[in-house]
Length: 363
Figure 1 (cartoon, one colour):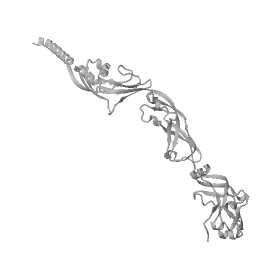
Figure 2 (cartoon, helix red, strand yellow):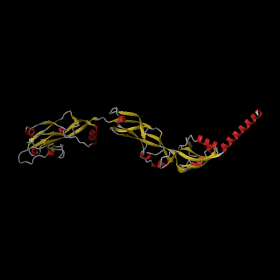
Figure 3 (cartoon, rainbow, N blue to C red):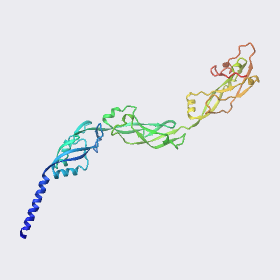
Figure 4 (cartoon, rainbow, N blue to C red):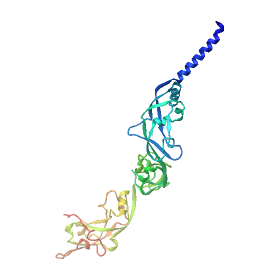
């Protein structure tokens, strides 16, 4: 009996091996899950992605059949995603959309094909994939400043930057398309006013035509921006300001008022105030006029001079002039004469009819 033990042991081992081999080769069916990714090639400037009306997480449910060994090998491989790139068999690299048959693509995947496992069903069976080629376009950089006023035009450096754009949307770009460097109030906080300052790194936004477009790449995502913040209070020197006489309407027929030609304009008037008001003066939107207001008592007393004022202009403005005194000659108009009109009170070269203004009647 003991002599037969080795033979029995060998027979048992061979039987187990044959059984294991037969079990491994036995055809079975199983459900497995694959994770599929559509990705661009690492070179060549290609884009690739899945187009879907509803979010797709890349999971594909498969019904497979094959040997136990083969199915386990497939399960082990599918623990890692399977990546399809444009240019492989069944996945054209030409720009545009196409349907990819997942069952066919997975069947020909080398590690699945070599396992001998057959894929009988795939859910979803196909997906819509999009492929495009990136093209380089050079776009200008436009600076937009919000929350602060600037003197002159802000400058971006570099002024033009290369952008990679999908070929199928390049036609959306127009001659006015530009990258945008947005500078807000927070970015300029702490910058000195009245002198050129530089922000070293301002993020760039794609043009409106490319917002939401997949695959757009800005070669340099930031730019330096140089700008001059406008001083909040500035001073402007106005070389010549006309002088007007202001009297009550009831006094116009009683007095002839004349300003000597040398005093009909104030020279080098310094105006200080908010930058927006000063800008209106520079553009001619706000006209400065000096006013000499004469009361009935002053006219009757034969006043010969008085300081001009600027009371009708915005109170936020301040005025300085070296000599605000205006010489005046007042003469009574004889009874029965026609009297002098306000436009004639200044004499030759004096204020026009439109510039002379009557003051309210005085008791």
